Length: 235
Image (cartoon, rainbow, N blue to C red; front, side, top):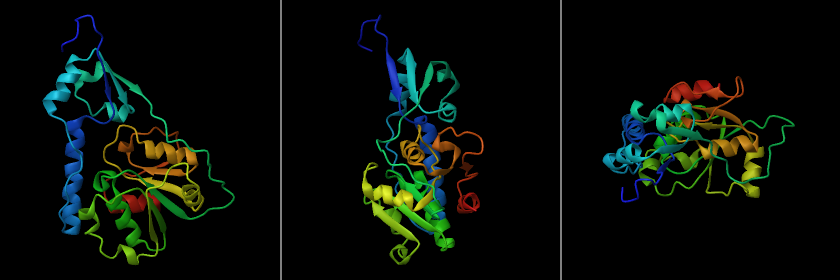
């Protein structure tokens, strides 16, 4: 606002439109609380709607990390300003060797458990104890989420590994024990964790709003934000 009028202003946007993302998370939180009779604090910290919309108005162009699905979450008046750019995965040199099927599944994510759909994944694997799930990520900041799962430590088919560097030997071992990754997120810009899993050689089982583009028949789409939809995609 205080720059010379000739200054070209470019806004970098790294996720779905803030209002759309907040509403999406709140819908998922409501579902989680109803399903588990629990209380969960939404994790998305939103800037002032005025500030972000004003920034979109003032910008001469907006670089959006995301795909067409991400872009569609923005109001029509900003569509012509948006220029989509892809995001890379995390640095890693390991690629899964497909000598035989391993039978495991990976959930690899940053925090915000309900927005990312970890509850749907856990509910599915609790129901299907014959399936093996590896969970990688630092979720220590969400004790209210795990309060809804008091018996998780007794689940032999669900293993939490905590935070791991994508280039670590331990993550490489976990990847080799898995065939696919599952990621039912309800709002992303373009998921870095998904792209990292693709680089590692895992088959994608994702929702549309993971916001990654997949070639035809090179992935399975999770149709809805329910445990039944996740289980159906895993089937």
